[in-house]
Image 1 (cartoon, one colour):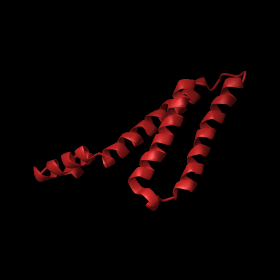
Image 2 (cartoon, rainbow, N blue to C red):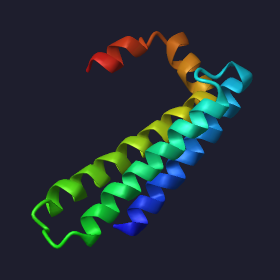
Image 3 (tube, rainbow, N blue to C red):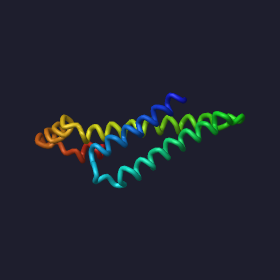
Image 4 (cartoon, rainbow, N blue to C red):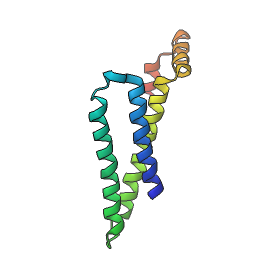
Length: 110
């Protein structure tokens, strides 16, 4: 589970970097405030894990594992979304689909 938490921590920092790369000084919230928020989020995940790890009662093992797995999936999806927004190849593909008459709204509805 420690490796998953390291992955979550890394993904949060990668997302911070990608967001800064995408928005620059127009980030909302600004980079300094966003860095504090992201580091606090990382610390909360590690605190929950350490509390569970040093607890003698393992009654919530499935819940803690589910939270970590869902967080890993969420941050991975967010990173892929940001890469898609930044990558010109993906943007060209979307414009190609629109030229061919494919409405992106219809794909999202399905």
